[in-house]
Image 1 (tube, rainbow, N blue to C red):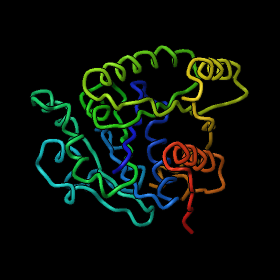
Image 2: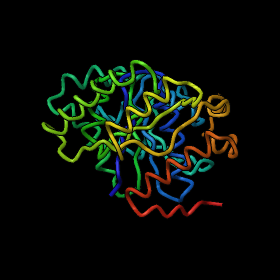
Image 3: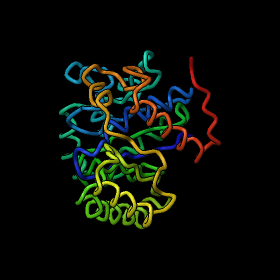
Image 4: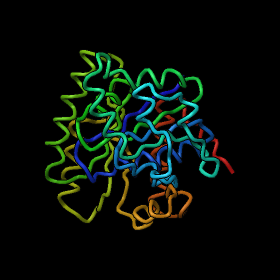
Length: 262
């Protein structure tokens, strides 16, 4: 059975898509079977991994609305070594229509149940809002990975997300846990960033990943080339950080044998 991680934070610009793409690619490099699911109408994860969202005929929207089969939508990307469930502007329709479906919160869970034996890890790139699609992700997930910048409003936004996670855990998905908090776009020269980082570790302890994702030009450039950073510049600090994060994830779930591909 696959382990499903929702990469979520209702605040935009904190590195959700960057984390989804690069953690997925790093896990795939360890020879795990990985599915990256783009749930955002902006389709940034789709474009960032080299797939033209405007040329995709079927997307996650078709699966959520039961208008396609997984084999018609999921694409295997051999150059990266992982599979993608793409998204584009059609996801807005799914967001609206799922509100009128009695079991609308369970649509993604049902889809992933059909392919659970095909993947070791499923990463869900959530929209930057606590929307119906984000709720679907939290209902389907085993764990929530929360990327966040160490800035003034970070803890306030984190509280709202934690409340949502706890409510879904209590009412719908009792297995849901906080997978971890990931500090992104970190600049150690910034005193505020260090203060917020210290607060996070004090409050959440081992839930905060030891890996810190630095501000890195290569990490910012890679999506424009349709590549995860490890294929764009494997020696960059961003690539090394996400590979380290993959190692942490693996150690938590299956002993952390990296098995790096050649």
